[in-house]
Image 1: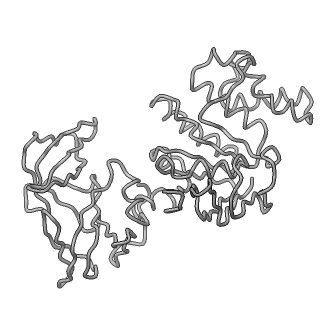
Image 2: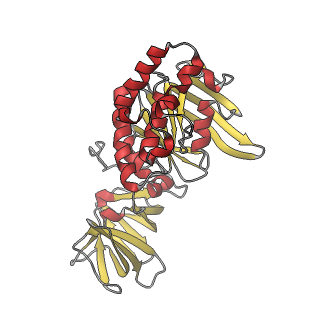
Image 3: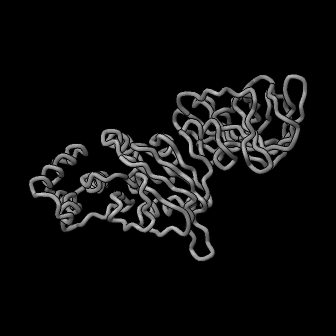
Length: 367
């Protein structure tokens, strides 16, 4: 196992800054997931760790050794790509053993034993004499993973390795990758654009936007206590609802004035202009007096849930509520929405989240 440390790492392409001032430490044996929108710099960061991209500024260390000038093949890392990149003229066994054959440090018996051991771990032992064209996408991905595992690297780097698989197989492979990583106990940095993969797989999540770190936290903390408005809107599906509000203090709480609704919450928030955030799953329909009056625009059934797309009356503002599947109003229905004070987030004019004194310091066990 090895720690990975990035200190003020920056990547520039002429005048374009792709990654800016990243400070990050990955612990021994940690499964770290880097996530963000397309073009945010996550793959570039991974490639700099691998040595496939030269850094413009900063320092990268693997187990306390600076690797800025070290060739990729000498960093003892293994990288798994979105494209499986298997040699079509080689069998599974030959693909997996290729790097060991080149190393010229292993006997043929040791290579065979190592390949068979890893094939058993990945449950592809019966495929060793087949060729890539005879395999399914999931089987090819396991072979690509096995080719990396046989080298016994200090660090695994994975760049969207599941993006070519169908939805069911992706779910299965997420579980398999977690199991394999726990068994091997190898430091792993995994890049994805899929927040579901990030939330379910990572010990911690690194969220990037425009080449800058936004938050590095366990998944449940990113969900319940986002650092800023970007993280709040990026993590969670559907995305968080945002309202521009004016807050005024009152006895025992604060008043909230927004376009389309006003309410009072039992929260200690200073007077001022804020963005109020409420997740769709925290909005409930009520027959009693609620916080927001809205009109149903679209109902999207999702099986166990329904997504309600709503318009604030007389306002061009769309909000989304995630409700139980038995709740299915018709288009054009007027509904009343409620939410608990404990479920809201406030963001200041710079987009940073404002801590609320009354919030608990203990997070739920899961998001």
